[in-house]
Image 1 (cartoon, helix red, strand yellow):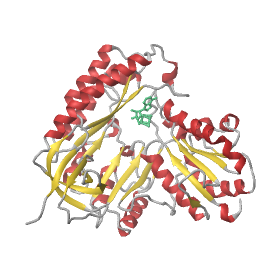
Image 2 (cartoon, rainbow, N blue to C red):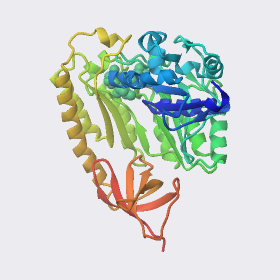
Image 3 (cartoon, protein in one colour):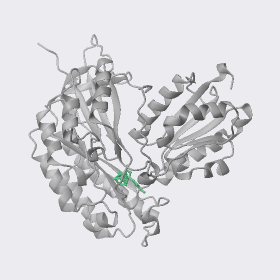
Image 4 (cartoon, rainbow, N blue to C red):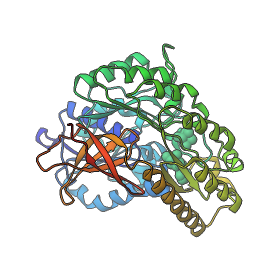
Length: 443
Ligand code: 5AD
Ligand code: SF4
């Protein structure tokens, strides 16, 4: 590729870990003299950072590649990054021969050398790792897309091996960064003007400081106590490793957001066992009770899988009754999708797709009414939002509360807010998925 052609387009699929990996990939490519462009047409190198958590996510990248196949003749090069790359490996070169780079997330460190090889005309460049890799992708070149809210990966990989999940195969074994390196990055971000930091990990609360200085809860508190940091979030927590000390930290450090995402996956202990989730319904509910007895009102959200092999009507009823018991503020629900390499793929008692769809619809309908009631409780409260933008058609500002709820608000016409500013809002109306309010004017 000639110097003036060193352009790339990057599309990201999947979770926040992928979104943040992409920020690091962009930073790395830019440091190598590449320029990011907004369309495939303008790009010399087309990259997809892929997700393989469910079949639909995985198919997306192959559809994209098929769409763009004809562009290869224009000299464009294609690369597949992330979980599909790690899972399918060099097989991708067979399935899509116009792809010239395949790179799993544990090999991003090698991207600069891989780019040199591609530029030299090498048609098949791959970076793939085994599960035992110790590689972390700590780079000084992160190109964060939002100047106010930023992610920091504190732990990569997963050792839990839930029976339905590909992540332990695509992202390798669990490895944590030292608390000093996390705090140094957070401090640097605060200096750059970031006020919200989100600590990331597949199981963020399984964090183990290699230098043994801080527990996860202590690290959370330390990030929250940094000067100029106003909000700290963390995602995703695993119930098995969720200690009371996390709730105590939220209670005592006001900058820690009052929101915990604690995926339950199923309300039936029998299904939880088959899923190898390492906790029972009762143990999960005990953790919920810690949060409910906190001094602050902590919003709780969850992930749920419906139609896991062998899930009976009674099992599903237990998931529904768990929704009633916990009263989540939001739920992300998915139909079970069989994944390669996982133990669940060879389990009997597959549930037909139509039944999975039915259960999903029943669950979402129930959750919708729970959320409507939960959000109704906010009416009359005054909450602070971080401004994210403006909906010009409605004349409403868009913000997010500490509990991670969307709160749209109106303000006098002469008021204007920068993205990332904090505004007090009085709540007037509740919807299942958002709140509406008015800016509180100081006397
Ligand atoms: N099928 C459906 N949903 C899945 N998830 C993970 N693996 C699967 C699968 N094979 C869901 C879980 C997890 C979320 C990120 O994706 O609910 O918490
Ligand atoms: Fe997948 Fe379970 Fe690990 Fe989460 S904890 S990434 S669901 S294996």
